[in-house]
Length: 193
Image (tube, rainbow, N blue to C red; front, side):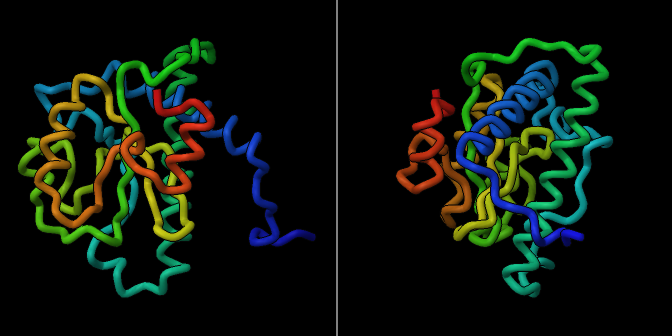
């Protein structure tokens, strides 16, 4: 009998396909909900609300446990959103060939100073911990550094940009503007526009 920890890592092709589908689901979900009139609440659906993620309370946990919890939280959220998207579209929806005018954001929770600077500058799009709204979350990569990927709808990109400019801790960045391995992989897969 295989244990939960015995799961194999997905191949690059499997990972690309999973992320492509998740991106399409996220775009489908968020593109009709994101609103500049309500940046603090429009992409925080109560049905998807995760538990603790990236807050100061996590800092005391061992690194492996912290990353495992975040990964599990992001996976549960994506699974719940997928079900809602399928219910809403009766199981059929067209995948978008690009980013739908939005951008992929990287959030590194362990670098956040939890000072609310991004929250204030983005009119609540980011929370006190600088985390993007949970409806936008794609997945969490536990490899060092731990990164949460999120898709920001086009209407909210200017507010996100305002938040990024105020954050001095490096916890937020656009994936297309980074040179790390993850950003390189996303570029190779054609996921950065």
